[in-house]
Image (cartoon, rainbow, N blue to C red; front, side, top):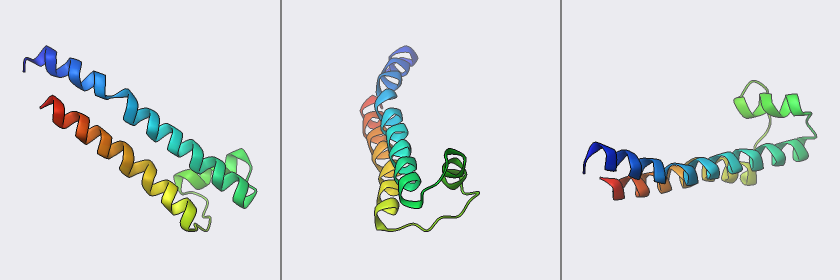
Length: 82
């Protein structure tokens, strides 16, 4: 592949994993906000790890899926470009 073709392929594969990551992070933030009755600021702090909140199976599953699913799709689409 030429560098231009590779760049085009990578750019075509980029939006879907990024969108899934953002949606997963938003879903996790919403879940934590509702479960622990947090303000928006507290929710942001909990998302970045400044404020500690107890995680249950659901929040852990959302967090892991938010990382693993977009990464898997990105790797799969990236492999097709190589």
